[in-house]
Length: 346
Image 1: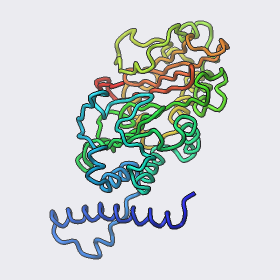
Image 2: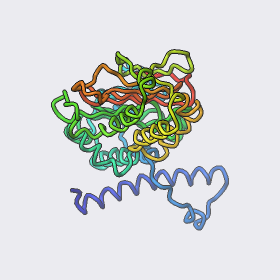
Image 3: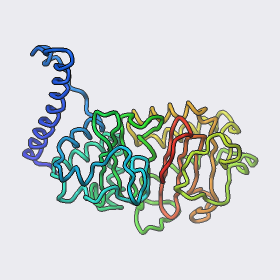
Image 4: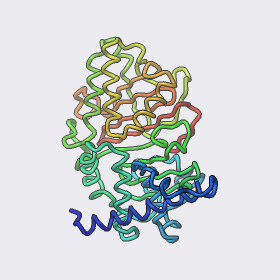
């Protein structure tokens, strides 16, 4: 529980950092447009915090040693992971320093947490904390960050990695993509091999919602939707409109009430994430033809308990992939863009 002293210290830290950024903006205006009057300076309204603005503050707070460890150029190619700003994985660390360790100050650790909280809807914070407690021992433990590019340059990304988490924000630096690039979330609620009901798994309700659509399918539709073998879970590169590349039932084969139910599933999938990312994902989907351009697949392989409640399924379009693997526990891979001409590094 944060103390009053810690809270005041953090406010001072954020105030100084934010003030520095604002001052830089004022100085720029003075140089380019002439002197700024005191009244004009007072009229500058504070900008609401976003993950991107908080990431800029974090970047400004780093020492040279810290920058050397976690800051890389926009097109940095990691010797193990490849192009870092497009990399996604289920269990990896983009850099070595542990967020919860001693490398970062308490104020910087809190900034990382604030960036995360602005990426995730408030009502989901406790559920992600449950996932992190089960998977890593809590937020920041066995997690790392990377700051890619330079704030204010038009090419800047914050990347948070660890077990069952790849999240990023970019302020639209990466063109054509939602979420700043591919993301990953997952949860092992205990014992690695979960039972069929996935007790305690915070993301299992997403699969329950998808199975609701499956239950509405008639025999012919179900025959189209069912696929025997699972693809590689990280096979999330875009196929475009290539005929036959995507398995499952075309959404165009669904009835009106079935499509309406699938719309609800999409809303459930997007529910954990901030409004700007939801909107960008919806815009990308609309540009490629909407859900009508997608297919929905349920996989017989990986059916825990052989109960016909499909633990593994996938919603995929020309440049839209939401792959849900529920066996032996939940892994979810997400890759969304408004064009298929976007490389994927998974």
